[in-house]
Image (cartoon, rainbow, N blue to C red; front, side, top):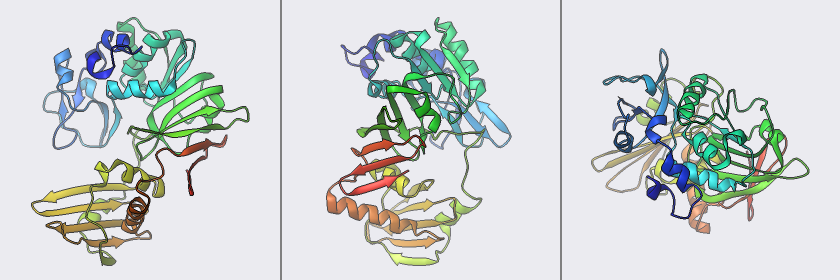
Length: 365
């Protein structure tokens, strides 16, 4: 695995080569139909076969963890914690620019694998990790102990007061806004690495003497689950997703651009996430017919459908015309050659507001 995750001269090569990934991710949720359950990945070869790994899932009757998976189990619900690919963890840590004596807060313990990598790079005494799910920190602690590592682990909400001060904070969850407690806990000159919830935008910023943090949106990309503050994520109102896929809209027009799979257009998806936080999107193909839909918890929805690549028909309902927002972003893209968020300057104020700027473009999160 080390060959596929790091280059030969990387400081991360030895930690990646030495850590038994399958110990931290023994079971996983996977499946073409979306989050079916498999178990038994208790060998190096077993976890290599998984295209996606996950450690817990909220079901209609509580929280099920992949650690307790049985063959044939098929729980229902939204996943709440994922085991990040090793290469992505290494990239996030590289963005942090660790010094040998730096202290780290790892936000999003998950399986504990990323925490273990950090311990092997910095030493366990310099690493703390937090997760809102007490089961995950407990299970991660047991796995870490099996490889002789004992960092500080805390089961707490990442937006709450943090237990110490740190030179580096690296989050493998998406946040919006940046919690005020993070800037409070970040030492002057310290460096923060996180992603903006609902986007693939990686923000890096260094704390200034005035208490702000300044940095940039990296040209790199990463996508993580949003930080949560309870057992589950907020969902769309009941029936809204079905309405977006099937109902006649209040406003029906011809589209300006071809139907697009927003999920696969990462820059487009990120800009939409900035403009309409909380938006959910989907895409389906049925023969020569393709359909994309958008929905928002405020009740707004939109759908675009076309056949044989022809002009799409747009249905929209609710207080926001979501497809119009998407088309405005696509027009900017055509006019300027790229979207402005990636590469933008970042200012994070002590109250948690994140301001993005690139050229004449501005956004406040």
